[in-house]
Amino acid sequence: MAKPKVATTSLCGCFGCHMSILDIDDRILKLVELVDFDKSPIDDIKEFTGPVDIGLIEGGCANEENVRVLQDFRKHCKILISVGDCAINGGIPAMRNMIPLKECLEEAYLNGPTVHNPSGKIPNDVEIPLLLNKVYPAHEVVKIDYHLPGCPPPADTIWEALVALLNNKQLDLPYELIKYD
Ligand code: SF4
Image (cartoon, rainbow, N blue to C red):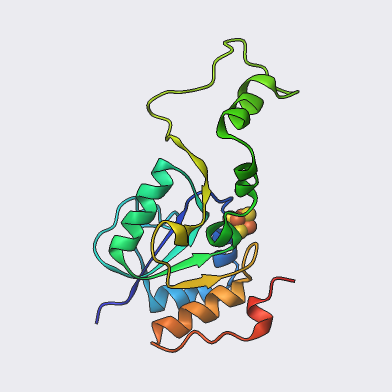
């Protein structure tokens, strides 16, 4: 029988949540017995090969490419999970939400105390994904089925959530695994 499929992506995140997935240590061997990984930085599969049972989203949406990838995940994944605070509320990248985008770009490329930019230009190559006016949490862009809080969520939280959902059980994690403090 075909194994359930899992896909993962990092949008505007730091890959710390992916490190937490790998932090399940030797249970990773059990995980690869339980599931096949589809599109994911873990196996470097770049495009979906078909429908997927569980999609794990790290990071919020800071640019148009993040939005496109997230919509693609929603289209392909039966269950979509926001993993970590960046996916859930934008996290540290969302600190720019209080400052106009123009000001952020000028500080980063023109006026910042450590900037060396003899061209005096803000990069605008067509290859660079367009920044959004602010960083959006994943659930403001597509429907998200579950949220796993933390920065990053502990490996045990991710493991327990995956095992429960793969066994068609209610996601009823104990407080110790979902607390913020
Ligand atoms: S929630 Fe924390 S660990 Fe995860 S991507 Fe954001 S900053 Fe990194």
